[in-house]
Image (tube, rainbow, N blue to C red; front, side, top):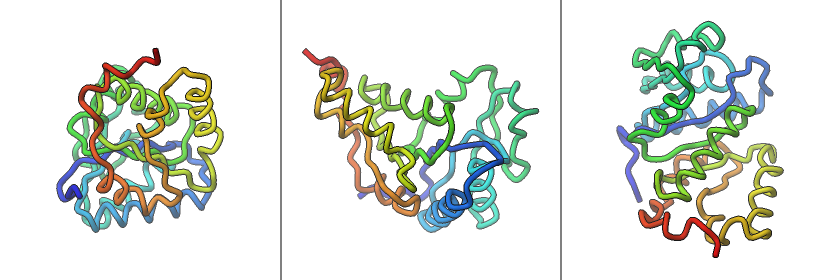
Length: 198
């Protein structure tokens, strides 16, 4: 089982200020686990929504958070004032690349189209052997049920191989996400050879 002490773990989640309180509570449970494990948060840097909520609780609890944000979003998402380590980039593509760089895994909490786009790109990169770490989908309140059904259909329709269903791990509670990273082995570095379905 991998140790997460000092490990960088990415969290994808909503920056929307209008967030279901249940999801905020879930983010708090995940923040507590970050502190318990000594893991360091890597996130989109915003101060609102789930994004800001989890960072606030981690930093106020004595943990570490690393923010990554494009310059053009500073006035929209507003960089988190409690986060000292910040990288500002020019494009969303650069942001996504840095969000995955030198991490021990990623966690997707509920979010909007940006969260979904980041998650699907990470799954694609893992399928192609470009990102090998665990991908944890937090299906709190069944939020990701439609997306998981679509991914399963992609396998049923032969757009992906059955083994590609193991590119990600699903948990129902955010508090389970870091343990899932610990228990998930890295993906095969030869994944590119099996990326297509022939």
